[in-house]
Image 1 (cartoon, rainbow, N blue to C red):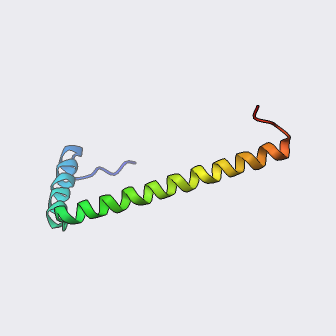
Image 2: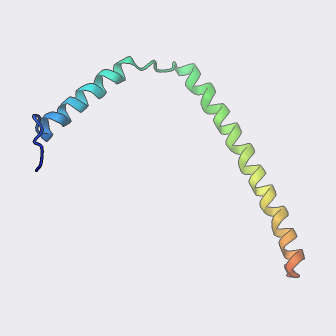
Length: 73
């Protein structure tokens, strides 16, 4: 036996979005300067990690080719 909810799907969705709108008004959004500083920090970190992964990939490909005896040319 199914229990009927006293709210319809439309009412529940409306209540959900009203609650979401209220929560977004409470959020403390960062100012423009902080967003720029964090974006630059993120870009530097991404560059560092991409370089590190590329370096490891290069080293492991050399090690793998030495173990398997594959020459590159």
